[in-house]
Image (cartoon, rainbow, N blue to C red; front, side, top):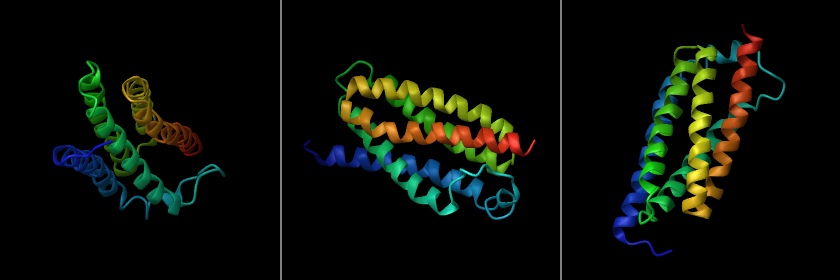
Length: 160
């Protein structure tokens, strides 16, 4: 795949947008992850805290590349709609951290992450149709949010 200057700048833009969502989520998370979150009851399958940083870094990178690959196929009618969903999920992604960690409301975050997962599933289908590699790159994110949804539900249940 040839990457010209414009295409490279668009890729950087997708990466910046994704990591802006990460920064907002990180800001909302920073205090609670040290104070509130360690005190919660968690399921035995809760990953160690060091897993989250590398996992999210990889996921934000993969989702950015997937969106960029779809953008490169803007000759397809459904590309615009798929990319609007992409930016919608970035907002939902950051908002989950605000709800769960910032406001310390796992029950609200659970409702929100179900909405996020639904948008991710729509994106998965659209990306797959537009660009198979983009669809493949999206799978780890959908899988991780599936796991995160179960973890969110378990934490809410154990701490009601």
